[in-house]
Length: 146
Image 1 (tube, helix red, strand yellow):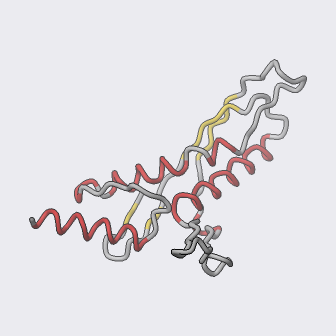
Image 2 (cartoon, rainbow, N blue to C red; image 1 turned 90 degrees about the vertical axis):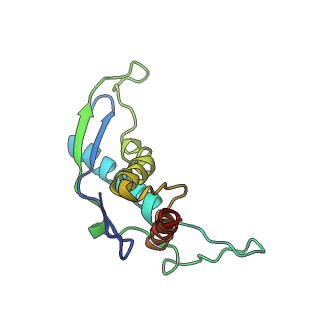
Image 3 (cartoon, rainbow, N blue to C red; image 1 turned 45 degrees about the vertical axis):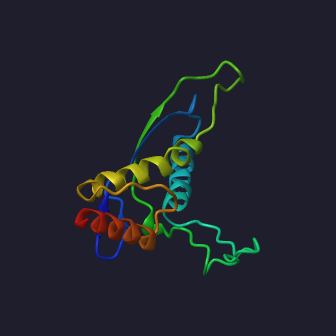
């Protein structure tokens, strides 16, 4: 993870996944499912946030306000596929895309914390947007001065 402390921009330098999808009938399809899951996880961690006003009315009502990752925001990922067939169906298959989605938020937030360890920053919410990161860095700098 690389974090620009002047702009709050985050760049994912390396991303790896491992999962057990049971029998892989079509390995290329499984890789695509996992990459789709990674894209969804990156969106959850860095972009997608519903804003509401004080009357609980949604303020993010279109894709100009509700951000999703672009293809350039989703990193290439090293994928490791385990194949442990399940006895619960005749093909031995399990889910595939969830392995890219479920751990992404915690992995990305943790990697951002590691990148900003010299500042003592703790990520306590997602998405980890540039304005949020800049506020964390500003608070850490103020605390260091006092």
